[in-house]
Amino acid sequence: MEIKSRNFYNEILTEHNMHPDYKHELENADLRLEGVNPNCGDDIWLELKLDGDVIVDGAYTGDGCAISQASADIMLGLIIGKTREEALGLSDIFTRMIKGEASDEEIDSLEEASALRDIAHMPARVKCAVLGWHTLDELLGLE
Ligand code: ZN
Image (tube, rainbow, N blue to C red; front, side, top):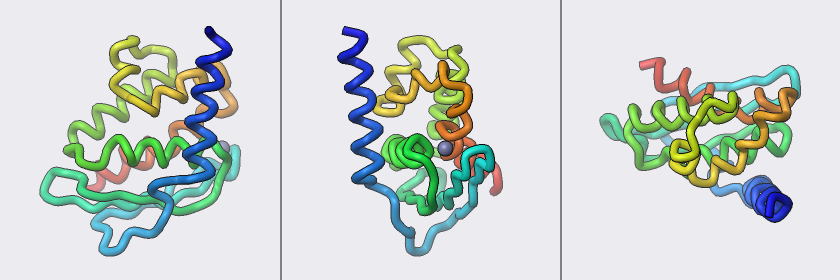
């Protein structure tokens, strides 16, 4: 059972890495910020389009390891259509999940992003997994 679920999570990460939904440039982005993880060489540009308080579109470009890229792609799928506050709430849960501090119920609310929960046991990859989310926090805090 454990092995089966691990494979399932790996499939989610591989799928987002090979066929990302949001890896492209965004025309007329309202917010744009670079996020860098020098430990691994991950470097992304996160772009968001806002209508009032709602994130109506988003995308990212850049390079990096499979975890950083898949995590950013999954994050965008989760936050588009959400309000700024809801997106920051999800980011808080994600960060706590990676630290091993989120409840099962909270982790469920992260949908596909819960595929990254095992990163909590891989300290060297933590900064890869949180790069997109930390960039999001900074970006939403800019205005
Ligand atoms: Zn990385």
